[in-house]
Length: 334
Image (cartoon, rainbow, N blue to C red):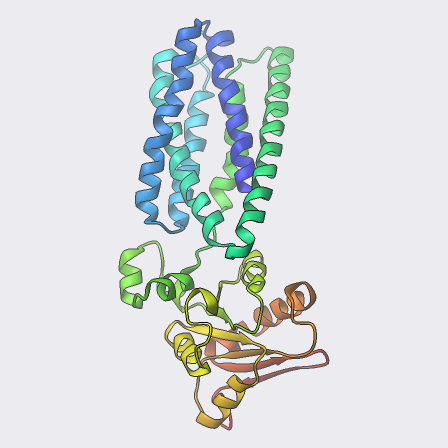
């Protein structure tokens, strides 16, 4: 949805720049093209900055800065005043449009990282294809909105740079409220870093991000659970992406303890191991019954994870079957 809004905005702004140059400022084709090109100058610079600040990960702060930079730049472009009823004019618009381009690059890089990082490997192609389709819808809607803004300007005798204000309003809710999900739990296991190393390398993460419980999906459950959990704001990792598929249960339990993860499994052996050892962790969530696919049991599992988040974070054995739910605090037997 955010990427679609981004392309919707791009459709509005590109046409608004041309309309500003030709219809409002009375520029020739060459100078109008210069205005349009300034956006292209800023975007690659912003992409480099966004990539550097993101450090290959999803950085919500970078997204917020980029989005707010776009809003402010478009707001400046919409200001009235001066000879052509445009406060900035031709020369003042050039640096502002460059800043808008830089902000665009800073904003979009973490979004693309999110699109690549969050879906499971077997779902990425489908999700990216769907995203491209939605983006085209955004581009078409942008053209419709721009046409409506031109009609408004002509009807009410408003300057063409009003379209920039429309673009700023489109971006404002994203700048204020949108923050891509940080899959902090995937950083440590994928790269083998300690908590201290992760916090030093990714300063936008907090200790709370790393303390939040993450779900380790066992080999006996489909990797599709990772994508399903992601759509509900739950961080998860399938064991096949971080460990040996043939590894013993003890290795999964050790990994889960180190990375503060709860094991999500169809296997009864994890519960047995907790009972025999009297261990206080990791938490284990056992899914029982015949319906173990996200399409069948997903809503029930998500509700349990949300309702008993505190117990799971503290340490618990949770058993979900077709007829009942059991939650036992660890260590068992206390």
